[in-house]
Amino acid sequence: MRVLVGGGTGFIGTALTQLLKARGHKVTLVSRQPGPGRITWSELIRSGLPLCDVVINLAGENILNPLRRWNEAFQKEVLTSRLDTTHLLANAITNATHPPQAWILVTGVAYYQPSLTEEYDEDSPGGDFDFFSNLVTKWEAAARLPGESTRQVVVRSGVVLGRGGGAISHMLLPFRLGLGGPIGSGHQFFPWIHIGDLAGILTHALEADHVQGVLNGVAPASTTTNAEFAQALGAALGRPAFIPVPSTVVQAVFGRERATMLLEGQKVVPRRTLATGYQYSFPELGAALKDVVA
Ligand SMILES: NC(=O)c1ccc[n+]([C@@H]2O[C@H](COP(=O)([O-])OP(=O)(O)OC[C@H]3O[C@@H](n4cnc5c(N)ncnc54)[C@H](OP(=O)(O)O)[C@@H]3O)[C@@H](O)[C@H]2O)c1
Image 1 (tube, rainbow, N blue to C red):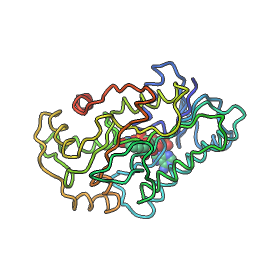
Image 2: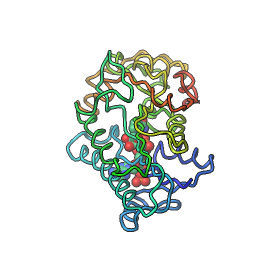
Image 3: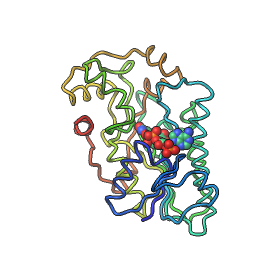
């Protein structure tokens, strides 16, 4: 199939492109920068949707960039980079003479309210309690198409574990030095997925005609707490991991609101993802981390 991927130049997009190509699909990226195998967002606005069978959007300013202060300007970039690109692609699909078969958006499990007791599947309520949950609601609304001619899928992803990017790239150095440990209390849930499985779920969603609606992009054993995650990462590296990172430090680096992404968490299960027949390559944390740090 011909697949158009918005924001496909990043961490998830690179893994996804590799898997799609290996499975014989043809990939074109939409980027802010021109380049081979790419079109730019301005070209998309000017010329409309190129002929394609599936559209995926991964574009978005990196929320957990520790070098950016969590101020109004950055919050606006986080929001508009997601909503504007999603709107552009949804409009281009609506106006296309030959609309694609499927339209897939990756959002996040921040949709569900952090809790130490609740368990969430795809039908659980959420999306209305803080900046990030409101962002997911607006993001998923921006993707909605008026008609039924294109199959619509939303994958709500947990923290993506992979080599050379994502949250884990910031954790590896302290953990390798034996200075790693739980963040804050460590009791908060840490919903995770191996990058190979997120790319796998997206590929499954684009290849299988019966997949529709929301899928949770987390591992089936993703009911891990942050302390358990720290311990497993230490074990994968053969290093102790008992030095906790105090909440106050996390809040000082990321700002109070953004720090909740690390200090609080959700217990999320991929009930619909499993029901659609997706088979995980890395269902267990130990093996997923060993692969990432190898
Ligand atoms: N990584 C995770 O753990 C995780 C978890 C849950 C959800 N997600 C979501 O999945 C998507 C992809 O994540 P990722 O980790 O692959 O992100 P990434 O590596 O930061 O890549 C995202 C891509 O978005 C584009 N982009 C960045 N800032 C932009 C802006 N201001 N305007 C327009 N485009 C912009 C960039 O492409 P160009 O430079 O080519 O334009 C970039 O390569 C994001 O929406 C993210 O929120 C990620």
